[in-house]
Length: 224
Image 1 (cartoon, rainbow, N blue to C red):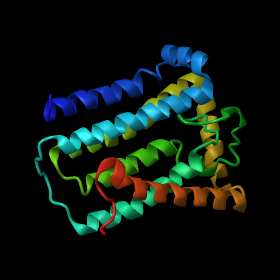
Image 2 (tube, helix red, strand yellow; image 1 turned 90 degrees about the vertical axis):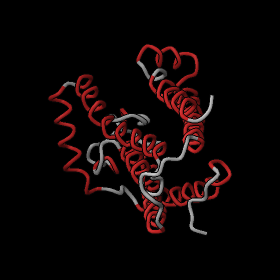
Image 3 (cartoon, rainbow, N blue to C red; image 1 turned 135 degrees about the vertical axis):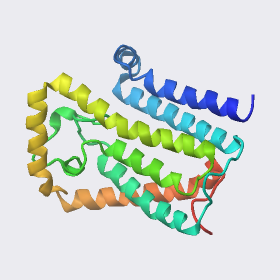
């Protein structure tokens, strides 16, 4: 099974492994066995493994060019990916009751929302940028299908999560909290230590992505 059939199979498996574990009943059972930290670690490892597989299968699919690669595309991706790393660094390990990925959501302070004052769904924003940026230098059919689907998934996911959160919190309470965030965003960042620590984490993450991109995915993100 090679080419398009393999790409289709792995792509479908990617979405199955991402959606089934987070369904309420399945997630509750997994949490009872693994605990919150174990579940997050296992789900993250599975996600990264499946992402590597689907990217590799896209690279092995028949090449059908839709637009050519240009040097300027790489410059935009290299710069934009640091923004992605910065968003992730400012997000991980912090409470966010309005989207997925939040930790200790009961400690969320709407008067000091941090990056949530700019986007309720920072991880989905990072995914949106990642997919959109990678569409630029990957103008073949398989990669356009892959990154285009990720882009659509990230955009649609915002609406789905908003609807689910409104249902859980109550529509009126949700709107009240959102308004609090909009008036508190100017307090970002809460302190200089936080900002420099997270900025350093973003630099480390970016460097790791650059160094591991070729060994893991077989393609250098740089022009040299």
